Length: 503
Image (tube, rainbow, N blue to C red; front, side):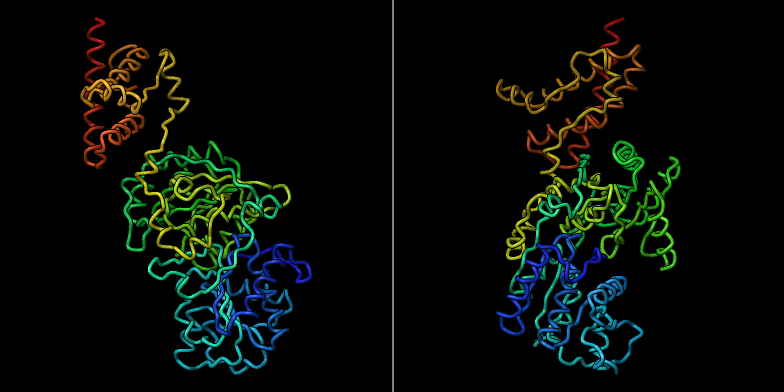
C-alpha cells in the first residue's frame, strides 16, 4: 500500500469506478462470509478504491468496516485517506488497550499484530463488523485474524495476488479474484510513468536460496559487496542514471553501506537507510531525499511499501530476487507520474527482468492465483537465464583491440563445426585461446603488454567457458572454474610462444 493521489469520492477515475462496481456486485451477490481478493498495480489507487468502498458500504448497510495493515506507517496513511472520503475512523495501535468508544465509530484501522493481541487478551470485542479490508493481502500475517471475522466479508487488496509463503496459497483463503487495470493500460492512459529498462547480465552462480525460496542475505552481501559488482553498479549509474534522483535497492545492510561508501568516494550525494534507523532519522533522510535534486538513496527493502516519492527518476535493482511481489514493488517506487516526468529508468543488476519479464508486460493473475505452485516451479532459474546471456565487449576495451580485424568468436558455432567433423570438443577452446592470443599479440608492443591485455579479457573468457560447458552439458561450478584457470594459463603460454616466434 502507498500514499495515493488524493481523489474526491465524486471523482474516481473511470477504471476505479468500474472496479468499485464489480467489487460491490460480488459483496452483494455472494454468500455472507465469502472472501474476495482485488488486484490493482502499485500506483493504481488501491487506497482510493477501498476508501470509497468503506464509505459506500457503511452508508448502504449500516454495518462497520475494519481495515487491516501490516505496518504502522500504513495505518496513519490509510486513516488519513479515509478521513478524506468523509469516513471518521479510529486507529487501533499499541496505545489503545481497550475500546470503550467503539460505538462512536463505524470504521477502524488496525495493525494486524496489535489487533491480534487485543483479541487474544479479550480486551477488545468488536461488534457489527460487516466488512474487513486487508491491505497488502499477500502477506501471511493476516491469516491469524480470519477466525475472528468468520461472519464478515473479507476483501483482500494487493498488487500481486501471490502469497509471500509458498506453502500458504491465497486461494485457500479467498474464493474470488477481481483483476483491475493492467500496468500497460495505466501507462497508456497516463496514470503511470513508462519504465525504460536497462538490463546488465550478471552471473549469480554464487548466490544461495534460503528456506523462504529467495536468495539469502549472506550470499547476496558477499556477491554484491565485492569490488567488481560495486564497480559495475557505479558504472551502470553513470551510464544511465547520472544526475537523476535515484533509489537503490539492496538485499543486505552490509551491501548498502558498501554502496554508500563507493558513491560517496566518487563524489555523489548519497544517503543510506535501513530498518535500524530511528523514526526521526528515517523522517530526516526521506525529507532530504524529497528535497534534494540528484539525491541518491541506498536502502534495504524498507522502502518497498508505504513509501511514496513521485520525484524518483531512476530505480536500481542492486539485488536478485525470486519474489514477483518484491520485483513489482521495487520498480513501482519510480512509477509515479508528475508534471515534467512521464518516464523513469530501471537498472537491473540481478537478472530480474529476464526472470519475470518486463515490468509492464501482461501477467495472467488468475492463473497465478489459482495455480501458484505451477507458476513458482516455472520461474526461470539462473542457469537458464545465463544460457541466454550475450557478451558484448565494452567500447573502451574494444578500442584496445583496434588493430585486429575481427575480435569475435562464436563458441556455439565453432562447437557445431568441430562436432560435425567428428573431432574432440576440447578443440573448440583451443581455437578460442588461439584467437584471443592472436588479438592480444596484434595489439601489443611486447609479451608483457599482451599479458596485461589478456587479463582484461577475464569476463569474456568466463562467458566463452560457460557457453562451452553448455555445449558439452557439463555445467558444474568446479568444472567451469577449472576450465577458466586452464584457459588463462594456456592463453599466457600461447602469447609467449607467438612472441618467441616473432624474434
